[in-house]
Length: 254
Image (cartoon, rainbow, N blue to C red; front, side, top):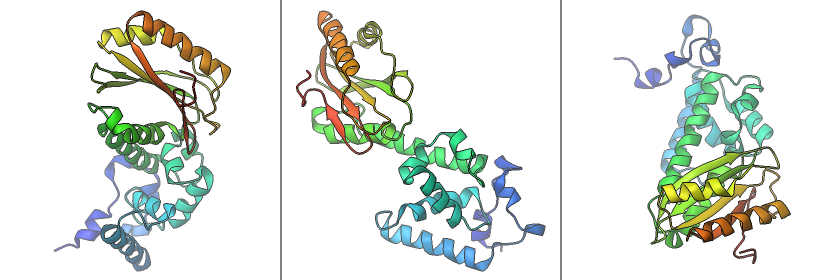
């Protein structure tokens, strides 16, 4: 009977021609024992102790194992961390930025983006259809997970019903590194379509500094005025930075 570990390390046929196949030794032989043993040790540590005690590069190695079945991926993991700062930065990096690094092809990018999508979906599930006040920390975690490492501005709106339950989370616009176009009329129009009673605005600052600009404050007041006219409450506007956030309501802007 064949070794199930050997089967699990076979190249993914979806990515014919990319680095997972090219890295295979001549004749398609098995992994060198030192690579196989290292991978098994990392998997065992992860299963027994979880990710908390693992540095970013080791967690990244676990993700890269499937994309590059037979090669030592530790150097590439270190290279990715050096280029993008940390594990979250690697997952959030744009595909064209990732592919600019030697050794990163379609298989690696796909594995990273699958993990990123899973993280976003899991974080979103913790807040959607939940009462916002009781899940505020989870809401902030979701915002940081999806937006803190973006390199361009994104503007999102959380739509709430009369019980302040989150009924929809929608991206309204994407912009540049320091500007995103927002149209108050479109925000309120969408709220009416969803029969929403309240809004929470969220956008990120790629610079990492969540301090609101004058344009941010003006835009927020315009949306508040338009929403109030239609009987819709603007609860807050949150700006997401790299490691912290600012609430307009807490800062006295609302």
